[in-house]
Length: 231
Image (tube, rainbow, N blue to C red; front, side, top):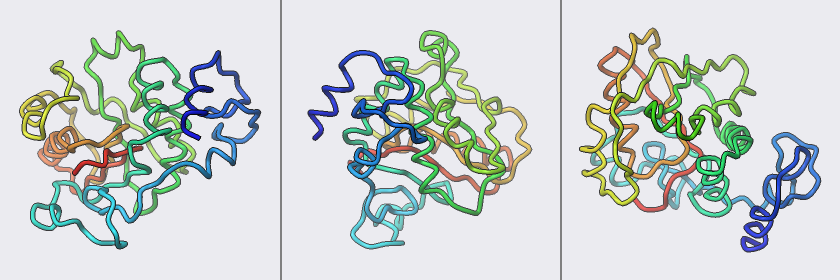
């Protein structure tokens, strides 16, 4: 199944009205046919603190019990495996911004009240955004606009320092790499949700949560499409 999806993803242009995975005709929104939707993997019993999959529902993992995260809850739609990883990779590096709306719509299905006053997409440094042409977190946020009354604020947070890629860095190296990389305008909110594509170690969300706490934000949630399966 995965090989078939990858082959179709890499074969030719994508037109409106086609499933974003299998390329078959699809007139439903988001653009995902029922067969591909049913095949999507999801997280089983995610920890409310870090979204790591557990064997029982509504339980915190050992790490979050010993060292609770700075945010109040984390909501993640799926593990960072195929075909999710392909959709995110094509969104970030191949200009397929329609994937963002699909991913945001799928993420919205696992969200629920209490709703934040605003959703804050994780910002890119201006140079990286200029090279890419867009911020993938902003594109995912477009898919969340189906939720009534949800405000997207992509101006409050800024990335003021360009940092090297974190792909091969450890948890502590990522935290050092991100220290002082973000800034925030005066924040009028008391309850916000940070939005990103993938959670790995949580270093980015930790840095941003501390920044928002310093601004007086009382409740921070973390929303992401996927998380890696390494704790």
